[in-house]
Each structure stands twice: as structure tokens, then as C-alpha cells.
Image 1: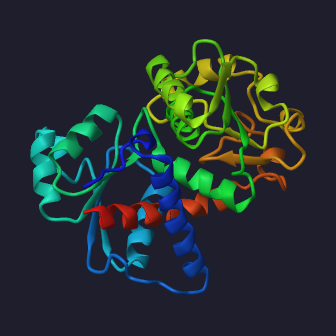
Image 2: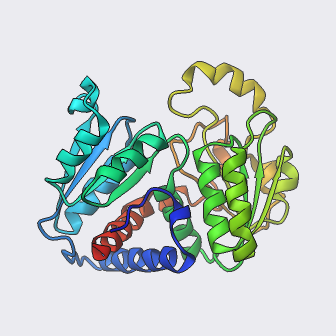
Length: 306
């Protein structure tokens, strides 16, 4: 049995296999075909962090696959009342076929998975957001940006930056990360990515210079400056991140046919300008829709491993 906790747990071939499934089911959906590959199966969705895209994409995705998704917030479970994580994991996993968790601590997710009888999917933690990266790379494939691409990530060294590190180090492309001083990526995660890169041929560049990072890249991506749980840092971060907005001046340094990605929600006038997110180079809404199909690919693949 496999879990989907971080991209680092998978080989290049496994990741591409999942994406092949995702593209296949997306094409079927476009044709109005809904093949019930997970007929009568159930997905428990545990949310300690709220979400729009994650809930809708997993719930609709499971429905399209012929199964059922059950929404559980921390207020709806005994977790919110202090039940030990291992007890909740044992009980819920004895009743469902798969679990998706969106929470704060990666360690809590890992602990839940270690006691679970069914596959567990990371819907987001403070350290990683792997399902989003599968949708991002699926979008890159669709827009012809998956052949040895150069990708620039501009902004906070957060869970999105960490997940880009894992993806690039597994698939073997070039990633440039530019963060303000004091907001760099986690050193241990960076070291893991660099070790992976020795085998995959990936090139990883970190700096504090967004202009240098975006020069002649194929993909420019960013994320919100203040993630969920960091609202009290918002004013300070807005000051510290000056010069890191992806605007037309920055995008003009990338290749003319470069695409812009953002996991959303986007705060226009902060990490990205309105004219960039509304430009022809922006594929953020195609990317958002691909969460639905990428996650169907993940669920189908995990179900086949059982």
C-alpha cells in the first residue's frame, strides 16, 4: 500500500504514470465519459485548514469516479476534542477506502498515515503541497512546457517552494527559487532535493534576486506572501516582499512564450499584478481545474496499489 504524502516518496516513472492517468481521465471528462473506476468507494476528507479548491476538486473527483466523499472538519471529529491521532486514524481508516488530510504539521499527517489501514493523501501541510504540484506539472505538459523546462519560483520559501524542489529534483529540470532574505526554503528540504538532483540531473538555483531568476525561463510561478496561519505577519511581509511582485516588468524577462502559474487564491497587487494574472501568459484557471483531474489520477493510482 502506498500513501501520497510528499513527491519525494515517488520515482520519476511513478509520477509520470499518475499524470498519464490524470490526462486520460481529463480527456474522458471532456467527452462526457465518466468511468467509475472507484465505484462505491469512499474518501474521508479531513480539513484542519479550510479550502475552496481542495474540497471541491476531491469531492467532485470522487463523485465522477463513482465513489463518495465525506467532508470532516476538525469541529466534526474527535480530533478537535483531543482524541489521539492514532486512534482516529485506526477508526476512520477501518470505515473508508481512502483518506485525504489538509492540516498544519507534516508530522501529524505522517503519523496518521502510519496507523491508517488505507492510502492517505496530503491535501496540504505547512511543509508540502504535493497534489498542487501534480496539477502544475500537468498544466505544463498541456502547454508544451515539460521538455527540459526552466522554472522560476518567486516569493516565500514555503510549502509550494518545497514541493517545487521535490518535483524538479525527481523529474530532472531546472528550478530557480528567489526569496527575500529571511524567507528562504528549509535547508534540510533543499539538501534532500540536491541529493535527488545528483541522480536526476536537475539543476537547482536559490537566490534573493527575482530578476535574475526569471531570465529566459519557460515558467514563472509564485504564491501568496502570507499563508494560512500567518495573517498576523501580513503587514511585515508586505514590506519585506517589496520587489517580489510578478508584474509585467518581471514577466518580460522570461521567454516570450513563458506561462504564469499560481496555486490560488491570488492577492492581486501583492505577489502578482492584475495585468499578469489576466494576461494571455497566465494559465492559472486551467491549472486550478487540473487539480480535479490530477487528484483523480492520484486516487486511481493509489487504489491500484492496494
